[in-house]
Image 1 (spheres, rainbow, N blue to C red):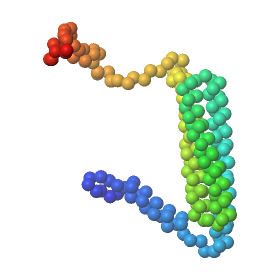
Image 2 (image 1 turned 90 degrees about the horizontal axis):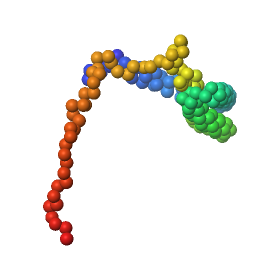
Image 3 (image 1 turned 120 degrees about the horizontal axis):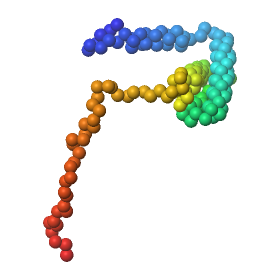
Length: 186
C-alpha cells in the first residue's frame, strides 16, 4: 500500500507488478526452433477451441433470442438482440483472427501468432461476459412480484415535500404590451 498525496495506490501497484511479471515470463525467448513450432501448434489448437466455444455460445444466444421473440417481451427481446449482435461481430472477428493466426504460423511469424491469439482470447472473454448478460436480460416479465402484482420501484425519499416547490415562482397574470417603435419606418 503506497500513499501519495493522501491517496492509496495498492491496487494500482499490484496490477503493475502482475503486469511486469507477466511480461517477463510471457515473452521469454524460446531455446530452439522446434520449441517454437510446438508452441505455435499448441497456440493454433487452443485458438481453434476458443473460436468453437465462441460459435457455440453465439448459437445459444440465438436460441435465447428465438425464445424471447416467442414470449413477446419487447424489452428482453431488445436486450438479447443487442448482445447477440455483438456476439456475432466478435465471432466474425475471432474467425478472421484464427485465419490470420494460421497464416502467421505458416510464415513463422511468432509475433503475429501471439497477436492473433490475444485477439481471440479477448473476444472469448467478451463473449463470455455477453452470455452472462443475455441470461440476465429482463423485461416486463422480470418486474412482477411472486403474487402476480407489479413491483414499483420508489425513486424518491419519504421526507420530500408533497407540494410543488416551483409553484411560488410561476408568473402570475402579467400584462405585456408591445413597446413603441424607436424609429419611424418609412
